[in-house]
Amino acid sequence: MGKEILVLTGSPRRRGNSDQLADAFIRGAVESGHRAHKFEAAYKNISGCRGCNMCWSSGTDPCVVKDDFYELAPLLESCEVSVFVSPVYFWGFTAQLKAAWDRFYAYGKPEGKKRFALKESALLLTLGDTEDATWRHAAGTYRDIAEYLGWKDRGIIAAKGVNNKMDIQRHEALGQAEALGRSL
Ligand SMILES: Cc1cc2nc3c(=O)[nH]c(=O)nc-3n(C[C@H](O)[C@H](O)[C@H](O)COP(=O)(O)O)c2cc1C
Image (cartoon, rainbow, N blue to C red):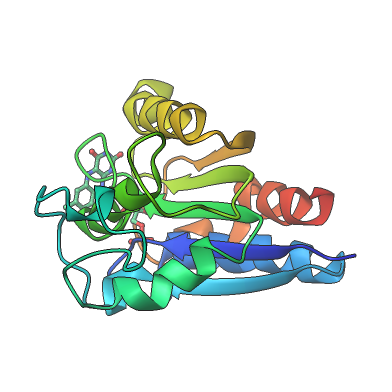
């Protein structure tokens, strides 16, 4: 049976490099009978975590801040796999993805009261630079989050040397992302 997959993107650039990478992944996943739910954090209203810790005492609401995280939360509770997609911004993730990610706090054990369906994850990155050193922090952050939240890492793909929107079109990362989608 196919898996339900959350594809959480962070770029504010429409049809940019990371969006095309996300779509390549989705193509592969759909070909293999999976169902992908693309959630574009940059086009949603998701504010940063306020650190009030109310999500640790309430077992019902995922957050006291009633914004578009309420559209994302049901996907965290129904999808088995999550794929995070972001351009590298200053050696890290976009603020839009980070804001959504911080709100996962309600799901972190042992204090968080909410429970994920998520069991596996992957990371797709795009970056202008061609050095591996440039994406190592983003990869390290992702790996630590996956380990902390108990997800099995299914892989990281980095499309290096892409800046303009069309740069990714002949990049080998597109095929790698499609193959990753197919392999799940
Ligand atoms: C604010 C900002 C910060 C960036 N920081 C980096 C960086 O630290 N290293 C890098 O290699 N590229 C950096 N880039 C380039 C993007 O990662 C690159 O253009 C990427 O392909 C954009 O993906 P997108 O088209 O999906 O938005 C930055 C771009 C912006 C707009």
